[in-house]
Image (tube, rainbow, N blue to C red; front, top):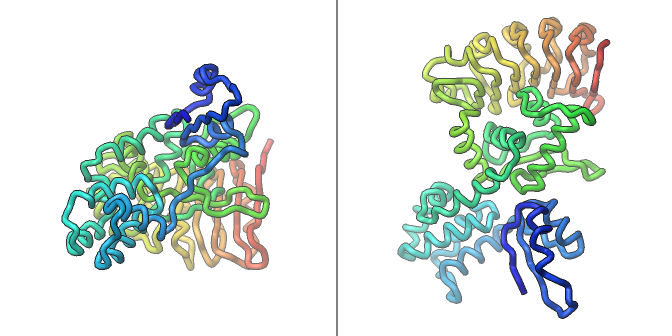
Length: 375
C-alpha cells in the first residue's frame, strides 16, 4: 500500500498516476486531500471517505489515547479531559496538538484545569509550531479571489451562523465577487462559497429541502486564522485605518477605536450585537455596506437615510422599511429581517440600482424582489 498525503490539485495526481500501473494484484493507493474536488476526481464517490468533525465522546477518547497511550485516563482527569476535548470543536489536529502539550506536563487536575480555561490559546502558543503552519497551508493554496472571501468570515463572532444570501450580498457589496460573462454576481458568489466549503474552510450549517446550502459558519480555530491573516492583509478593523469595522457592542467600538472620527473612512460596518450607540451612523459617511441585523429598531434611525453611498443595507425594524428609503439611491441590496404587516413604500421602486430586496412578512417567510433591472 502506498499513501500520498495532502494532495492539493488534480494536476499533481495526473502527473504521478502513470507510475502506478494497475496490475490487478491487490495493491492499494491511499491519498489524503483537503479539497473535495480532488478527492472525487481521484477516487470517485464509491472509494471516498470524508473525515467528519469528531463528536465529544470520540474527541475525549482520542485525547486520552494521545496522552496516556494504552493506559486508562485517571478518574480525576476524566471530566476535565472531556471539556478539553470538547473545546477542540471536533478538529483532530487540534486534539493532537493539545494532547501533545498535556503529555509533557504533570498529570494533575489543577494543571489540566488551567489548560482547559483557554484551550485555543494553549494550542496556538504550544511548542507544536506546525499547527498554525498546517492551517495556513489551506489559506495559502486559495486563489487570489477566494482569499478575501475567506478572511471576511473573521468579521463574525465565534459559532456565528450566517444566511448564505446575506453573506453573498455582503461579499458582492465589498467588491470581492468578480463579474463573469456567463453568470450573475449572485451565481459567482455562490460558486465562491462552494469552493470554500469544498476546501473545508467553511461549513454548511443548514440546507433547504433540495439540499442547497442556506447558511454557513466557520470553525473557531479557522476563524482565528482568519483574524491573523486579515490583520496581515489589513482587511478588517485597524486602529489607524477603519475601512472595515466589525463589532458586537458599542463598548467594543470604544475599545477598538482610538477615536470615532477614524470611522469616517469606514467602507463597511457590521454589528452582530443587539445595541449600538446612535451617533455611529452619522459618522459612517462613506460606508457602502451596513449590516445591523442583530438589533431590532422600533423606529428606523433617520441618520441611516443620510448614508447615500450605501450599496448594501441589512436591518430589523418593527415598523418595516421606512419612508424616505429612496434617498439611498445607490442601494443595490436591501434586507429587512423583522416580520411586518405593512406594505412596502412605493418609493422603493424609485431606487434604480436596487437588484435584491428581502423583506420578512408576518403572513409568509420571505418576500423577494430579485434582479430588478431598469433600462
